[in-house]
Image (tube, rainbow, N blue to C red):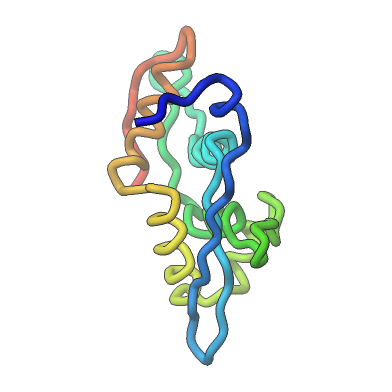
Length: 140
């Protein structure tokens, strides 16, 4: 094993880009996210709520999960994103669910996002927030 040094670790890694075939011979590309991009994506899934004691809790809101992941991973063949994070609502309203699901399945594999990871998003983000409750209840 080659031990990486500081310079190696701070050198931007190559983004992996993979094609996703859709029906009718059409397709898109999806890409891997950097750690920073994945953190921002995960933060977009948190919803702040007040509990019965008036304390702030965070719950996992999977509302528009698919379209949020898609806008953060759909790219051109060079890895340049095609959408801005705010485009997720328009994408969700315009794309067929079956097409979006195909894209999201590949994006989840590429970015190592499992169902268990979705639950950990809230637990990790709440644990890192000073002065907040550690509730990790999830919306379904």
